[in-house]
Image (cartoon, rainbow, N blue to C red; front, side, top):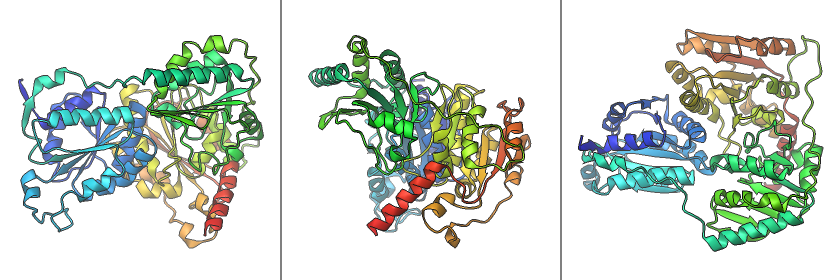
Length: 564
């Protein structure tokens, strides 16, 4: 085979970087491109229910596998996906967004085609996406097309941000040399400037040598930009107390003896707040300092000795070193830091939250008890997905087993994100380890935005746990404003009938409303096996919420009122 179509070239390249599931929907401008998926061994087309859900699914798949691919059609399809793409951009997730666009000749003639605005402008949607993409490409020249595809894949993978790739319908069938596939795409990071890197490393080592009470704080980009291993080794070598943010949950093994808990500014437990804020050196790895990730910007370090390690720069106190990448800096630190901190006397870390005390099995479920108890149900290797609202806040008090991957869209916070994300995570988990469990916690209100994607899970025989927290409406919104407002209410659904409605035949659907019912289910050996798709409706009081969410809602309400 000396030549292959450009469409097949794209999918062969994606397979080479371990992207094996493609998300999206068919449309007439991408149909011929989709044919090429089936020419590549081991590649599958997910076939989502809508483009927004597909973007959510691609986001979660990329968080686990390193990058993903979403395919939509021109105009109507690509715009439907943009909310999900914007979330991936905000939260540093590498999604390659491939758009099937009208032929080059149709664009040149400015034909009034369907899916256009009727004004002959075929570039407008590309321009929209450019604002939420790390880079973009519109293929017009076959000679440079393979190199452009390679550039887009590399940028998606390295930068961990969405990339837009437009493929005209008449181009995907054209032939390119197959031998181009023999040279792998270079996914290696470019080395740091040696002088800048040396200055950063030497300065950080000096700060570590002079610190008596240092801490490590891991955030979202420790996972996104692949420095979890370096962060773990830094903790092992230094023995510094270590904490995570809500977005960073899962980036540090929570069974590690030096793990001290989740830091969320004023919303932290008093012990965690004191431990972090009294430090004389904070080593912050991969920070994304959004309001819900910081307790409405309530970080209150007593020291100015702050080092921020980022994917594309390092910040030390008030000095910024652009272009110095944290992965290389951390690796270099690890080669010498043991000698620098050999005299450090480890201080105790805050004790983790104690298990729930025994209560009468007939006790109604409440959030505070539930989220502590969830930690008893989780297993090493689980993927835990929590929806914006009570779930995203409650999970902060759940103690994760080691190697647990947490997904929570804390910064972008698009309600309903996690149904699609659960699908993408389930595909990724199946590709990595068929026994790996994917566990979703979503509110009854959020589920109504994106419930259709459960049908795609069933279609592919995926087996996630779908915990639906039924508290009769948008509790997070009610806490912020409008406890009795009609706009915060929803139509109640018969959740236990959803799986068979979407065509499931081998499934489990159960409702739990008391502590005894929860424990009986969670302790059942068969329930803990990843053997079938499960819907668990968890009945909770309407205004019951994790303590941290109540405090955050009060802060948010006060901020909104002040800025009005």
